[in-house]
Image (cartoon, rainbow, N blue to C red; front, side):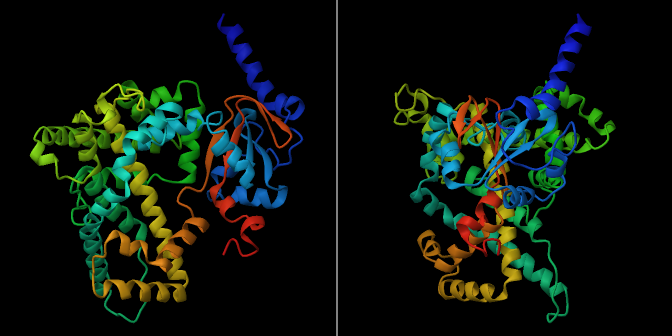
Length: 446
């Protein structure tokens, strides 16, 4: 029996890898890069390149509709045209969800929250979370940002003074600083928790995320994708058995980061569970929770309220209930997705400003006109800083924190006069989309 199953599986892999993509696939006529590795396709090429850059080169060479073959013959279509993106992300979003491997990776490092759920659950979850991200609530939270920001400024001033010669340029790894300040802000605004990683680098949450972020690389992401594509891979990484035996990954060449990641995420989940217990205990006292502006307090207050659909059978909410487990997943989403991507985005903004002194001077002049009379401007004042808005938007365009995302065809359909089979991946290279010269002009990459 085993030999029969093994033979069928082997023939299936051989067929999918060496026959179907080149002979029978309806996508075989779509132009694209050479296959590369016979088994892994362009997977190694993507893993060894800067995120979003190789896809941009493919678009330049083959046009805005590109076919690339990945591991074991898995086909992906790279698209950049606005109409094509609308078809996948807007009008066809239900039939083109995030692929399972992507949801599994996001779920491991950023929780199974708003980023990973799809369909009706996503809609209901957004309905519950929307009030926490309303303009009035964001306005009320602005003051909470300033203490970590001012602490960062003092840290940087101290570093500059310690350099001695003020006339000489110094190099500072700003991503580390941005990661700390955004973690402190996210913890305050999301959980009412003072992480103080800027002042206390030994804080357990800060240490866990610092160790986790050290693993971040295109190569590590590629390895995670491969594990997630293996049968049973996602279940293994999520299981208690897998955690207890995570040291086995250290014995496999190149997979030791997986063991470190599992250790860090277990620590972070444990901290989140403890913080939630503290917030729930706090919420039992109405006077303690009523004036809180952090997101978790607002959600707990809403859950306890008969006026909110969290615990009701209101048809508009579908009776959706955000239990403790779901709240922990949301905490992981706020922490993992919120602080890391923001830190990355801010680091690129600072790098671009350092590379363009004229833009830096212009922005400094605009900010000083505002902060000269009020060092802690409110939300509306910050929104009115037009050049600051332009700088941030342009940085996000040229160097987006998330350079590539993916969707998968849940069913077959016609797309650009080509039949797209069920299971085909759609690669949405955000960095390439944002610098496509047909839309942005010849200086799109500048």
